[in-house]
Image (cartoon, rainbow, N blue to C red; front, side, top):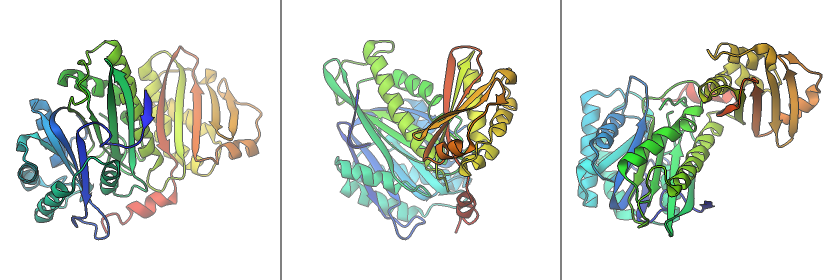
Length: 407
């Protein structure tokens, strides 16, 4: 496996486009299209929030039906959530407009929306934007990057990646793009991720692979503890690589899983590190656990602790907050056996051993915690399992962005 240039258009047969439709923003692109030259097997995972946005309901219906997917339409600015029958009807309008513009089946069109909850989409602008997208789509890497930019809301940068593997003597590519900066706490964020591959693989294997991988990628990130109404991860496979079918459990499958995990983990970390107002990516490794579930619970509890996040913002080795978060996580462990380390590219330092502080330099700890990427390692000494979670520090910038988000 190797990382290559590009994102969603890196895989064979995928095209993209972006446009400024004026959905909500007046000074930037706000719509994106992903199009496949051949119909795709589709897999998806979606928000567990009881309040689900209209496009989530639409996409889940499409994915569950088993129909082949050929186009994805995404808008930013308005989330089309809590919009009732009218909002769901706009999903149908969107699919029909895309079908007309692209010459595909309306039932094979999925979509994503992100932005303000409770506002109705200006459907006339949306459908006009679809016509422009259809006219401007192509398979260039540049168009893929511009599409990744068009789905941003409070994100500070686009998020995209592509990797290639060999399967049965054929080159198979997986590419992806994502957005997310706030309302990030997936349980499958506002988080959207779209992944494309030219692999030959069945829908069942595709869905199983995605569902298994989100547990250790998107579901292990948190910016603010709020699970969005719109969280969606869609994985499309058009088969144009013409490789022998990737069968569950085969050597090619193992390589495909590794490549998909690389894409998902990269996008998840980019989302976590780009949290609203954040200055640092905060990684937590829970080691020495007796089960993966215990490790996930411990790592996620620490990365979600607001007190810990503010300490990271202040470059303060306030280890008591970490031990406290572990204690209320619900996971069973002996606090008198816990070791804690902080590490970054500036170095590594042990803070506690067997539940109590060791002699360490506060100045050195501050220096290590002042980097843009910081890791806390907690070892509970109960077994060999481990898990990693990702978040960010919590600064005044988060309040500044969200206090007047609707305006």
